[in-house]
Image 1 (cartoon, rainbow, N blue to C red):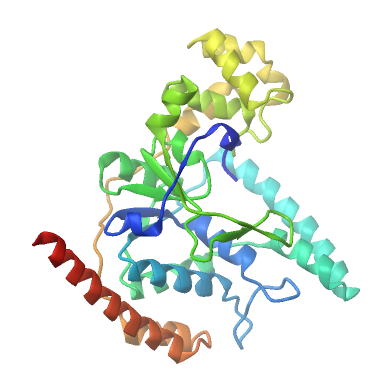
Image 2: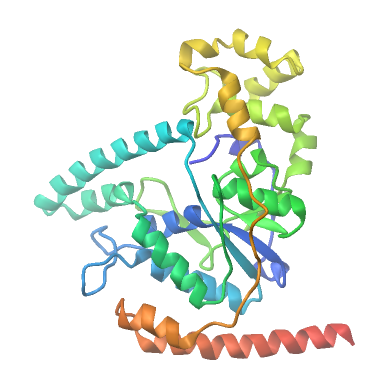
Length: 344
């Protein structure tokens, strides 16, 4: 979900070709949720293999990652770790919403109402531990490095970007800016469209790159004030923010109170909306645990392992796997030749 500051953020269009050769950290859970939410059958149910196992996440992952590999993007997938106590409240809220959506979906299914099934299907999406394990296994077979974050995957990816180990983060959430990612990239899709939330329609999109320093300068805020801005309008730790305060009014209040955050949160009556102090959210965002224990190293894709995972275990067409290897080897050769021509 992330924070609701998107309307204030400026971005620039970017082409996938502009990212050629760059190392990019992927917010793994964010991308996988996209796949399980949008890659579905005509009635809205997820795609499954002959054994009844959901395969939407594997189909999306294999399709997108292999195409980006062919375009010479160096991907690193960062997975979430332990969930903080504050975040657990948000996850509980999401679980309750999914249960309600499941009831509506079951009702629509019993009435054979395909349109209503489609409407509620995406809202029931969940990423199970087994699906995460399968995703990591597939990435390993593709030769893609995986990093396990101690806490928020997006915070770990941002830390890696701050250190200069990756160029930018791939995510759809603006939390990356709160975690001080110098750059993050949205809408890195291959078909130029994305599904609208809770709707059956799609919108045309293009990849965007967002600069933290450019946005802080544009907003006239520093990093601490940006975190406070997010808290006022709502984050995963304080859903909905302070009622009645929109993004523009929030900026006005922040500038009026300068760096006296205690005075600001008393003024907006934080304690009337939340049963925990503002400092708990502030430091949860500012001090997310990160780790230096990771290794970014790519390997050659393992064709036999990919066939085992995708074809033998999940009914993928073997042609799909072999076609990738042929395309990848061809693209790798072309990228190498272009690199040599640039050198000379």
